[in-house]
Each structure stands twice: as C-alpha cells, then as structure tokens.
Length: 439
Image (cartoon, rainbow, N blue to C red; front, side):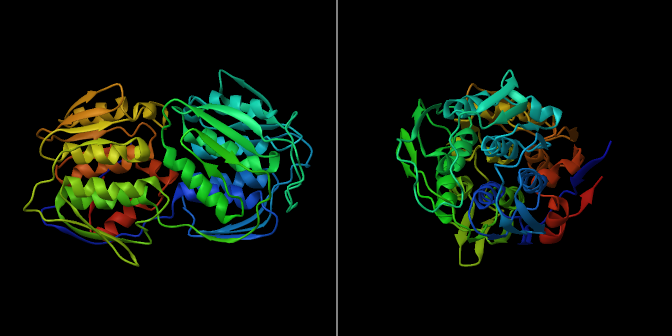
C-alpha cells in the first residue's frame, strides 16, 4: 500500500504555491462553450481528472474540443442530432456526471452515463426528476448511475439561433433546496436551449452561491438569469462563443493556506481573486477569525500567521463552502479550543461520507470528534502517529496530510487520489513551501 505524508516542520513556512484553476468554474465554462454557437477559448482550466472527464464526455456528445494543458479550444458545440446510443464514463467525477446527464437530455438518441463504483453509489434522483419535469426520458435504478437519458418530449431549439423563437411560457420546475445545487445548475445550463425554465426552490437552499456561480458563467457566454431567494428564471436564448479565463481555485488554495495556519509563516497564491464567484473565497474570513492575516492584491492572495499567537477554534456555518469542511476540520484539530462546523449535513453523500469518514480518521490520530446532524464538533487533543484512510476522496487526502506537518508518523493512504482535482498537489507543496514528503 502506498502512503505519503510530510516531514514535521519546526520553523515557519514561507513561499508561493501554484494552484490549479477552479474545477467548478472550469466545468461550467466547458458546458456553456459546448452549447454555444461559435468557438470559445477557455484558459486557466483545472488540470484534474474531473476536467479531463468533462472534455472527453462533451466530445462523446459531439463537441469539437482541442484540449492541451490548461487551455481548451471549443471549435464547435455538441450535436444533438447525432444518432446512435453513446456511453460516457465519468469515473469519480460527480459534477461531470450530473452536468453531462443534463446535456445528454438534449439528444434524440440515448446516452448512458456511468462511473466508478463509489460514484454509482451517490444519489442523483432529484436531477433525474427535474429532467423528467422538462420532458426528457430518464431511466435509472434507484436514482443512481448508470442512467440512460434522451430528449423524449423535451423541446430543444437550434443552438445557433440568436433569437428567442419560442413564444410559449418557460417550463416551471419544482426543486428541493436542501439537495445538491449541482442538480439545479445542470438544468439551468441547458434551459436556454429548451425554451427557458423557472426553477422554484422549496425549503432551505444549500450552496446557493454555487447557483450564483452558474449564473455568472452563463452570463459570460451571453445568457442572463434572474435569481431571487425562492425562484430562478432562465430565459430562452442562445449562448455565444467567447474567450473565458478561469480564475485560480480557492478550494485548492485552502491547503497551502491551512499549512501556514497550522505551522505559522506566510504563503502567497497567485491568480486568486478576493471578489471571485467561487463560494470558497469566503474561507479568507474563516482564516481571519482563527487568527490569520489575509491580504489580497492584483496578483493574488497572501495568508500569514504569527507563530507567537495561537490558532483559535471557531463556530462557523460552512454550508456555502462545504468542500472546505475537511480543511477546516484539520485546522480545528490543530487549534486551541473547540471548533464547531455547522450547516453541512448534506456532505455525507460526497466522494466519501465527509462527516463520518472524516471524524473516523481524525479520531485515529488523537482528536475527539462528535458527529452532529448538521456537522462536526472538534475538541483538539495530543496528536499521535497513524496511517489515515482517504476513502477515495481527494479532499480528505489533501487535508489530512497537513496533520503530518506537526506530528511525526502521520501518513495518508492512496495519495494518488488527489489526481481528481490537483494531480501535482504533492509536488506543488514540496516546491512552493519547501516541504519534504515521507512515504
């Protein structure tokens, strides 16, 4: 079994770490570009497996995409008229599988979307229901992958038509607010080609800021949505090709920021925007509450912590940046005082059970963790060495590895799982912060 950790650090860390582009923004931009008339160039793309799977999947649906490194040239969009059943393997990429299921609903012929075993266990029934409400034919067992989808009675306009050619009222969809925002984002992005939709949200809406991100990316490609607390209106219309720049990924940046928060020192991440549409940009305020200093300039963001001042536990609602719960949990385990993470009961159905599995691994190295209905309560204690399981989850791997910066003998298994979002994570941390790894 392959295991990796970092050598413990005695002195403050200083450096600059290069992080990939935002995976969330990258996938939305690729979808919009592949639904557009005209060509698009997307630069700064995330370089992980999720993005690669998205490019390949859109190609299966007929898009003509040249992809090299962090740049994609979308020369032509998908071809809904293409006949014959096709299959898309999303691997472990949850966002990719959900977005491509919606895009595949534009085709007259059947598309099968499947993935790795752990992805096939993740619930997607709400997305399938939304697509059925729009008129698509959707067939799955228990609302999970594999799913077979085709256009059915769904109206699909010509994606090159610049005028609203359908006078009928938009389709009204009813969606629960307490499930993954990716389901709503998926139907938002195909809606302009389907006569438009009104999505009515019921209950508490989790990760609302991701819906705003979707709207922002759609606007960049020529379609403007109207959003309120209970309703989203997506008009009928046409996307237009454009040149789009993906900003650096706040989720990835959380790991070098957390390293400095744990050990002390200063780290810069270039390409980050404090005003980013990424909800995880709110992590800057979380770091400040814990005792770090955060400064943004035209190049990026700098985080520092004076080692003479303790890292402090906090009570925080993480519902709008739930991907960073593992990062914050590791900070809580390294802080003084209790940390309470709230508002994230829904992350049990991520790549892993990001409450139960995370708590199990933190307990394995000496931290007292209570799993609550909506999050975690973390009581830090003396750390001990352990080999921690990643549960096939890239975010658990990158966050739990940071515990080794202070405690000898902590390693994580399956270190290659980071390829899902940041294939060069280990090298980037070694080079940028002059860390040494142990295996």
